[in-house]
Length: 143
Image (cartoon, rainbow, N blue to C red; front, side, top):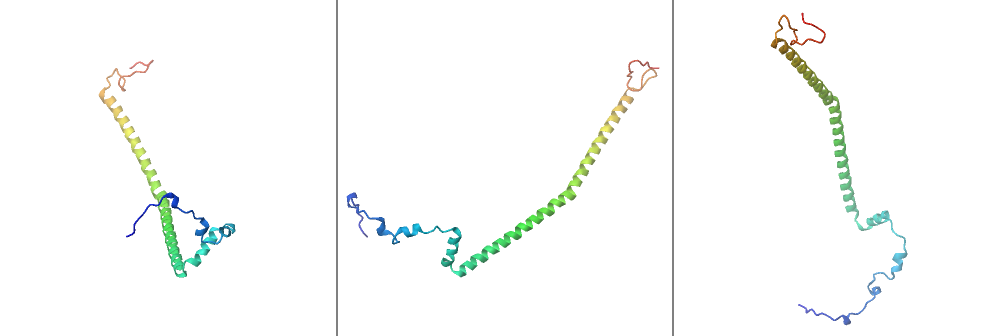
């Protein structure tokens, strides 16, 4: 193995950037027109072999096609479920609500009728009393 030595800072040589440059002059690259994204993508044709480009293109189109079919299926399914709910479930819910209101009304009417019967049966009217619990409105005399 080699030996590692630490060199003092005064032994470091200064090297200009031009010695390490891959271009003869950097100005050629900087003065040229800037490439657009489309031009860069088109330049990839030269880098990527045609066989790989076709494979990537085929894969992308397959993924796009499958995604489109799945999205269409879910969209149509959502449409069918929504319209079915509006046409079947909503009227059913409204009818159930009407029936509940009718049952509640009947229960209230039955309770009022029972309370009136309890008033009548609880205080049997004697000949000098009124039949409704003995209440006499002002200005009237029982017979």
